[in-house]
Amino acid sequence: MDTPLNILFWIAVIPVTIALGLCATWIVRKVSALVQWRVGPPLLQPCYDVMKLLGKEILIPEQAHQGVFTAAPVIGFASVLLLSIMFWRIGVTQKAFAGDIIVAIYLMVLPSLALIMGGSASGSPHASLGTSREMKLVMAYELPLILAFIVVIIKSGGVLQLSRIAGLEHAPVLSISGALAFLVSLMCIQAKLGYIPFDMAEAETELASGILMEYSGALLAVWKLMQATMLVALPMFLVTVFLGGFGPNLNGWLIGLGMYVLVLVLIILIKNTNPRVRIDQAMKFFWVYCFLILAIAVSLAIIGNTFKIYWL
Amino acid sequence: MSWKISALKKSPWVFHVNTGACNNCDIEIVNLLTPKFDVERFGIKLVGSPRHADALLVTGVVTQQAAPRLQEVYRQTAKPCVVFVIGACACDKGIFTTGYHVVGPVDKIIKEVDPNAIIAYVPGCPPKPEAIISGVVKALSTL
Amino acid sequence: MNQEELNKKLEQISDKLIAVERPLEDRVFLLCESENSYQLNKFLFEDVPLRFVVATGIDAEDCFEVLYHYSYDQTGCIVTLRAFIRDREKPAIESISPFLPGAEWIEREMHDILGIEFKNHPDMRRLILADDWPEGVYPLRKSSS
Image (cartoon, rainbow over all chains, first blue to last red; front, side, top):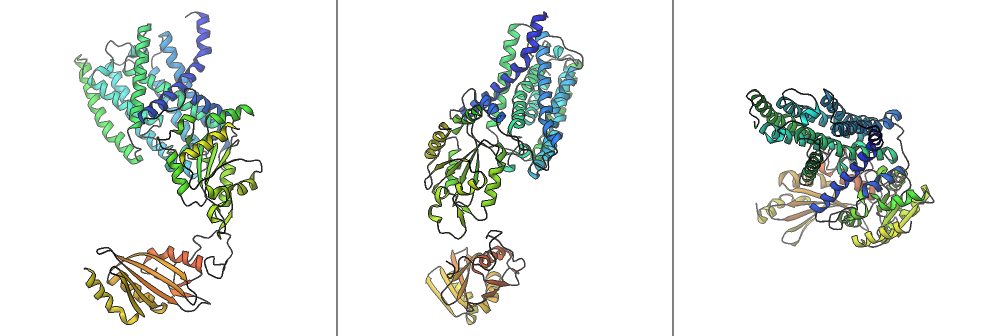
């Protein structure tokens, strides 16, 4: 890759990711508004929200652990940015390293851990309730998410490299086991993003904003930016693993963008047509139903890989 | 300071405080936040914690029990913030003027904590949601 | 049981009552003195049995009154027991919370607002007045302005 383009890439990647994240947040709010037959916010609304939050004072409770309280949003935001930069790099240069899918899975856990850290450092009973719910939710959905990726790894014959998974001749979702794994991972992404039906950690009406209750001002702005950037990174991950990725040429990029919008619309539709579930219902959903579906998917994938049947 | 206020005008997040109201004004506020009136066009969002809020929607004549709590909620709201006083009782005690438990209208209690508080009044018993929207938009445009 | 059987059952306690008023078909007032109110309430709640709705306190000119409202859901009949407390200096009546825990809070409210003392109440704390409201000032008595 030429040096000026390289420099351009490194300068532009973070602002472009944040801008895309705010745009994706606006898409979510606008489509939710249209689903509810109303007009919805203007295009720059998430931008105004972040700017306004940067101008408010930061209140730290007396009983909070100040170091962890301030560091938690920064850690969460940094990890999501790192994940996005990794994806852009792989997409633009088509060079990946072996085992990068493991790094991606690890980086995806960090935002949830940062939320838990921030919530428990708040020193407030509402926040600790939100933290306990978030911890149980993370324990519930992490394992099905990893299993869903293992299905794709099995189907690709044991490769652990994102660019080779994205470059498979048959996209994993076009097979039965791949489709099942895609559905399960979609629900896990819904839980990771903290959207209905799994938004019990930051339940506005029950817990007075639960886990983020004590945050205000610039720290809250960083949390909102983290949530916005997760809307870019996580569907991009799904597209890369299941739906064929962002291909090497312009055609591939356009198809990848279309797939990204499709995943986003699926997330929005699930968000708008469901009520919030209780934490024990969520755990039962992930540990019983998702595991059953994934057990079927894994066995189908192993059979398909052994006998070279691609649609299984 | 001016860019903070201009950003606040574009995205006022509201938190609802009831200091002893008969609940009529609260029902109108909850009606306001339904999709029918679509206040998200103005960037208004209901938040669950006063620390996230830019505007407090205060209803109710302030009772003796609620007065220190209202002051605490005001202190917890991150500045700069606006206080919207909704309803005739909150504006000037309304029909509860001679009640035994009434301490004062909302602006008197808030000015004890912060004499420079920005307070906007939306009278009515209860004010219609259209009146509340018009009051909020007018108040924000004069900031 | 229907209305006639209810009326016949209420006849059993008529020796403890001052009077029985029936202004409407489904509205019964039983008047009694405060000394008998505990047994009468126990009879109405356990033996008839009726559903306890709420209790009311009144500051009448020459006495205090405590009204206990019960509902008979099968016919929609409301039975009210009016207990007169003749002592205006230190009004006191037996609390019915020992067998009716649902009456605890309404008795606390009557004590806060009217100053009626409820004997044997398990948990007499301030309920609705402010934490720094002075003791001994009862807002809804006719003498307080």
